[in-house]
Every structure is written in structure tokens, then in C-alpha cells.
Image 1: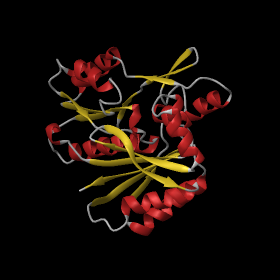
Image 2 (image 1 turned 135 degrees about the horizontal axis):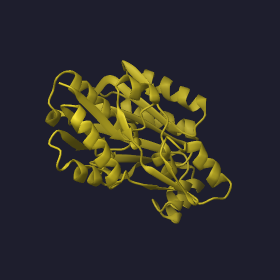
Image 3 (image 1 turned 30 degrees about the vertical axis):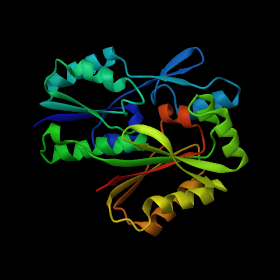
Image 4 (image 1 turned 90 degrees about the vertical axis):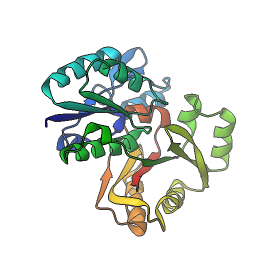
Length: 273
């Protein structure tokens, strides 16, 4: 059967993975100053960071709109036997709601709520591609993911209204780095680490991977935004210390995630059995 897997741009899959699995991407919108951009097409995370560093307001993001979905789904529905579209968690964006509305009259278009974000969302996109390639039906494409982020500074979350000024100030003064975990589509603080970012990252990866036998070892994502190469290298070495994955994929967080988390963010994302 002919099929097409699509996702919104928050899946943060790198260009090589998008091309390898022939994933269709629908961009969210990013408002920066007086201009609106398409995530990953007209604007990149460094553009947002430069704007904020120069004193500009934080970027705001908007969902893929209904018209975009109707146009894309209608075209793909005519070309393929089935289409599977995977969205960022419906708790974070109305993209999923818009996609469901657009697909309502197209019986061969299936819309999946990833209940995740960034490359946690991306894992489900790639799992959808794998299952479809193996001949599985679209209804079977459901997967549980384990997703969390370590955030080096709370300034972006504070300014974006994601945490209080008191929490941000206390964390920064005490050199705490919160692990922001996504479970069942919702975001919350799982644990707070103390010390340098490198020290916290090592502890974070040990907590996530050490001594576990409930992890699928096919693929793990390292998803940074605005961190130096040595931090990425440290993440790779820490992962190798605790688990042996077939593939370690490094993909940068896109504009939507980066505009809320800011620079100095890194995620370790994998699938539980």
C-alpha cells in the first residue's frame, strides 16, 4: 500500500532523518516582533536567541492552522492509500485539534496525538514510519515514550509564563537545574539537580539510563538547543557508559521548543518497552 507519514514541525527531526524516512512536515508559526515566520523554514532558533539577547520580546508560537491542514491532507489523501499524521501533545498546542478537524471527512487520514514534544514526538513519527513500512495498519501506530529535558536557565520559562519568578530566582541562586519531564502529555518538574550544567547532565543521564532493562535500545535522541559541542560530547559518553544503543541521533531542538526553553537546554529521549 502507498502511505505517507507526516508531522508538525515540533518533532525536531533533523533534515537527514526527514529525508531518510520521507516525512512530510507542516510548520508551526513563530511570531517575532511584528513578523510571522514558519518554524524551521523562515526562522531558526539562533534568530530567536539573537532577538531576545538584543532586548527583544520572547517569540510566541502558533499552531498549524486549519487551512494548512485541509490543503495538505486533501492533496495527500488523493495520492496515498493512507496518511498518518503525528502531532505535538494536544496539551501543548491546538495543532492536534486542527488536524483532527481537517481529517474528519477524509477516511484514509489518521491523526495521532503523540502526548509528547520535540524528539519524543519524533520517536513516534519514526515508529509510525517503521510500522507502515512493515505493512502494519495505521490503527496500530501507538507507542509509549519516555521524555524529559534538563534546562540550564529558567529565564525563558519565567518570561514565557511557564514558571514563577520566585521559582526561577530560587533555582538560579542555588544553581539548580530542573529536569522537566513530560508524562501523559503534560509537563512537570521531575527532579532538581545542583551544580554546573555538566555535573547535572551526568547525574541526569545516570538517573535516566543506569541499571534499566526496560529500554528499547534501537534509538536514542540527544536534542540540544544552544549548548556547546563539549556538552553534546559529554552526553554521548554518558549514554555509552550506561546503555548501548544501535543509533544515537543528535538533532537540534527547533524554534517552537527553543522559544519556550531558551538556550542551554538538552534532552535525552528514548522509548520504554
